[in-house]
Amino acid sequence: MGIVNVTPDSFFALQRTESVESSIERGRALFAQGAAIVDVGGESTRPGATPVSEADELARVLPVVEALASLGPLSIDTTKPAVAIAAVRAGAVLINDVGGSLAPVAADLGVGWVAMHAKGSPRTMQEDPRYDDVVAEVARWLEGKVIEAQRLGVREVWIDPGIGFGKTAAHNWSLLRHTDEFAALAADLGARLLVGTSRKRFLGLLGGEERPAEERLDASLATAVVAIEGGAQLVRVHDVAATVEAVRICTEELIAS
Image (cartoon, rainbow, N blue to C red; front, side):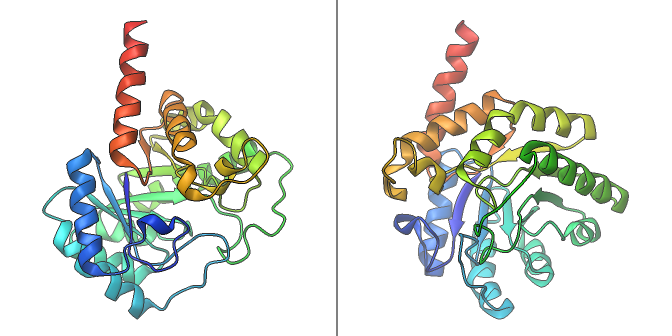
């Protein structure tokens, strides 16, 4: 899943696409690089991000979705029902829902839905997040969301443990190490697993001194491969070409061995 953030404040500055034109060009490039789906978002969900209005978000994402819909599958990254509805009508086939509340919208529209676990809002989620057992608590929350979505009639349900969303670095590593458990949970429930680690802050904390997002590519590639080897069917990434190549090499090596 390639990322198109039509925002001026996403955490990875080198891939911000503030204009509609640059966002469309980025989406085209991601499909050409091998993205299975492109995720379009108009509101940053980085820690501390300020919410944007519904009107601003619609103005950012709709022209991009309309322009890219003929090139391949699109998801809309939003928490707002009106944005999700408009984007699906413009061609999106999946709602990537950080808020975990849009299953009724997906059911009504007949499209897929990603339930992502997040503790708190983007503005507050990194203020001392705590869990007794992060893997068990996130799994239990996701299970409830899948059951609810299926009861509503959502035909394609994805779960995402929400790495980086209301979790410490230790929580994130624990979730990643247990990817196989989330994959098994998804399979048991008739859902699928998406994992997103790309360029996130916890990757920059390896080795002591924090590295900026621009220096986290190697760690992003390694964790994407770990997620796929653990059973994730989709990884959400900024660097599609590099991730496709890394996964191809590792998959071929696994097959050869």
